[in-house]
Image 1 (cartoon, rainbow, N blue to C red):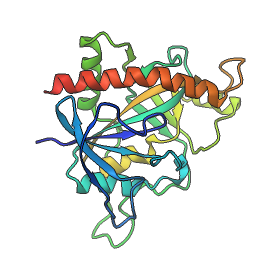
Image 2: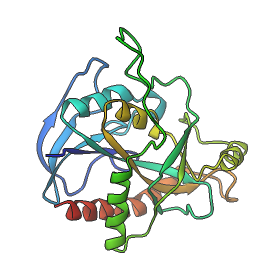
Image 3: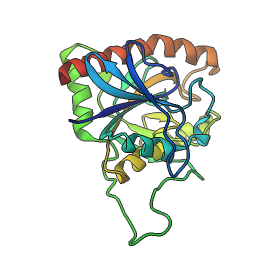
Image 4: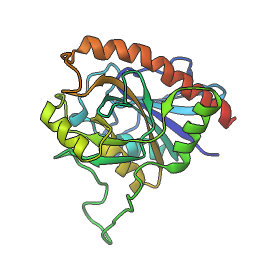
Length: 247
């Protein structure tokens, strides 16, 4: 049976409605994951849940042990991952509190360990990363949204930045010229590491603010947190709809 995990981001440290069955505290060859992995039932579907920033939310994006997180899920026999991210909106369609299911990304991070294949190799490994997100999982989320009249944007290019600071207005101008629609800090190297371990991976991205320079407002944590509270309810509705369709 296919085993699915949800990686929670900012605003999703705990999964409301999850009936907890077990808790796993793994230790991988890459170290410990961000937090204990929760095994539970959500809408009668058995899933695993891992908060990437820890519980409580204390690990900044550039300090996350992405290899340990993905390896721990692989070791728990997970084959599909839905990663929830908080992002900024760049293009006009990417309004705050809107859910985006990106289909592409550009990696602007630096210094992050982004592969399992570095040392003691029998041969060099090159993964195909033409489509960084699983199209089958993307379509499942899109179909669940359409069937249940949940407003989402079904495509988009995710600019992955280093963090933890937010971007400058000039950087956002560059990212938009490069074809990016949203900007966040966590989709890489999660996506490529999952691909290396042959796990399907998709992002469910919640826009929590306009990106720098896209509004006259100063970006504050109050704005982000208020939009997280409002928008995360929509994310939970979408996840519930998805699991209902998967039954």
